[in-house]
Image (tube, helix red, strand yellow):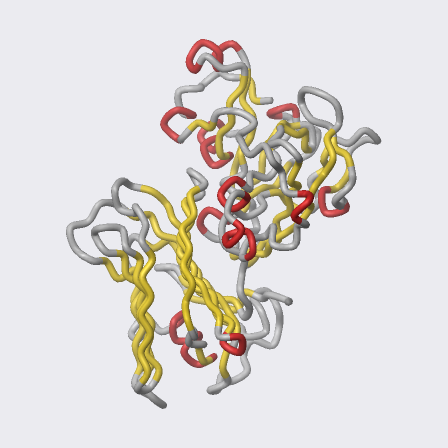
Amino acid sequence: MTLNWIGTRTHEDGVFNPAGLGCGHGGDPVGLDLLTRGSLMVEATVRPQSHPVNLVRFGALDPWPSGITICLEPDGTVRLLMRQGSRHLSTALKTTLGQKVQTVHITYVWDAPNRKGFLSAHIPDHGVLWQTEVLAPFPLSLRDARRIMKDTNACSLDDTVNFAAIADAPCPLGPIPGLSGSAAVDTPNGPRAIRDIVAGDYVSVQHGAPVRVLWAGQATVPALGRFAPMTLRRPYMGLWDDLVAARDQRACLSGSEVEYLFGEERVTTAIRHLEVRNCAEPTRPKPPVMTYHQILLDTHEIITVNGATVESFDGSAVLDNPAFLKTSVLADIPAALRPRNIGLAAPVLQGYEALTLTGVTIG
């Protein structure tokens, strides 16, 4: 099923194009046609609160009463509330959100013809995913989708929201690939663009013999928030060419300072933490959407991409849960190819830890 992101909204701007962001012919009038399948994604940086927070709240009376609210309650419950005419829908998702400051992607996906939908919350920093089914989900009309994205009087975003986005098909839930399609992965036969790698190919890893690729895939996401692309600049980190990646893609750090501070030969950290070191910067010009690629290996490994060492795909949030797997980017992986050894290739540093590494070698 083809997926197009058709609208994005931040506190500064709102964009809507039913043909797809970045496509032409976006000025046609929007009618009452239904988005029978779709996605509404919200990225928010949540924190402890003593009262419910309406992350997104939309309401309209014409041509009939309609509304959608995504609310985070103090106990961590994410609640989806919808109205269409005289019909109401309410779904609750129990999480531990709000116990500390953390970034979360909350997503409502619906497939109205098949009467299936899901509400999920994913914390990318820790690979934690919650998900629940939405019974008989309500679709959105194109008119309401446009209002949510562009009408600040009809739809409000809480200050904690980084962006909201709408797609015309269900998007994958949980972890998302993080490398641009042109990223060249080291293989036994030399560097190869990751978009050309398929399951069954072999790639080189930092330590050991080449490893077979179990899954190679991609996902298209709005180029906002944690999905905004960053460029790792050559010649830093051993790069022989610039590398474009998502902000949450993790790079490998090693050297004597890593061993002294953390007692580890190597660690990893999200590339967004490297911006202060001048080796990473926001990609310009920034496209409206990005298609990211990644590869899943039998074990979680450090691979070499454009000369820098980065992590392979971390699917641990969904691999041990068949229900989560079906709605993720790994939905099409055969059961016989699912990795049995789920784990991290190296310990992961959070932002405050990464900032202590001022002179460390990256790679």
